[in-house]
Length: 363
Image 1 (cartoon, rainbow, N blue to C red):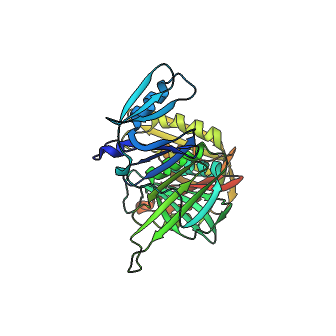
Image 2 (image 1 turned 120 degrees about the vertical axis):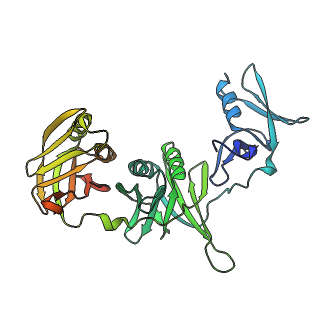
Image 3 (image 1 turned 90 degrees about the vertical axis):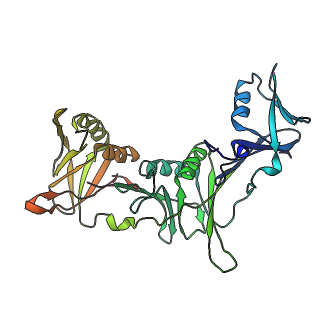
């Protein structure tokens, strides 16, 4: 539902009952949601305030409620106990059309897996789109598999998907608001979900717009795809790497403490990686200094000693997005800048026993 809507009807929900189901539809003009619950009887279609309908339903003391439509003036009557409520309505035919089925190429996936991977990439979604960031999540499906990708220009998350089956061979941006809704809806599902992409062509053979769909057992979400071109994220992945193995939970706890000493103007934690340990440190004139050492193991691949620095919040988000007891910090080799100063390189973090989710953090 839109927070502020120039069209009053879009602040309402279309409601009607037939065939043993109560159908509910909502839209903000672009994103559209259709859902249903079991019901007995029939109810002609009408549009009623979503906020008021929710308030009355929550206030009801009964296990079930009765809905009926009265005319002159038309009101939706709700009775779930001793109190009967009557809400003003608008004509159902004035409500935007809502798709009742998905179209196009599909990807079928376990709901729990989709929820987990959408959660993993959510912290890297940009608040707005720029040249190097997108306010949305890239759904990428090709011969090598399917994955979700999000970036805000300073960090990037790639989360692999394991579809049950798919005919989708396309890259499409899921708008951030749609990704959040799918994530919420997937959390209440226990079976399979379907993602679908339909490219609509005009008479000239061009594709002016593409529709996205997400479907569960009793709901269907539809929306136009996100605009813009997703950054070429593979170009920033480390190519010459040193790998260090670190316990995840102690690293999270230590980062939280070290972060207390970062400067408000430059919130940076210095990271020194060596074959047997990782040293974290931070300092600022107003908060003093903090440092700590944790066990680490060098797994090979390049330089045995790495000096770099990151925003502690970015490292924490990456560690929290991963599972497992241990993580690998896979980092590019040291480089020298002006005056021989060591330049930090991006770090790729992933679980030691499962690299399906990979978090890239820029220095």
